[in-house]
Image (cartoon, rainbow, N blue to C red; front, side, top):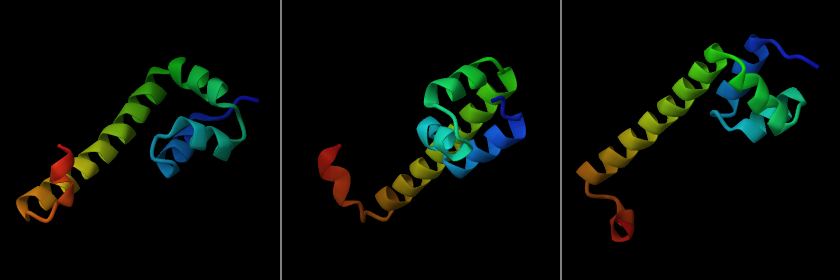
Length: 77
């Protein structure tokens, strides 16, 4: 079954860019979703944007903890 870009994008956004979770949400295999994404420059860019957005959020949260000196995880850096 072929899924629309809109449905794939919605699933990727809902699942934070995690391919396995997005594939499960739309009812296809992880491999099928990867194949579909890799066949579309638009979907590849959207996936990259979603992942970058989540990375930015994580980096921002980490920076806030570092600046507030409340990050116990410094011991692991």
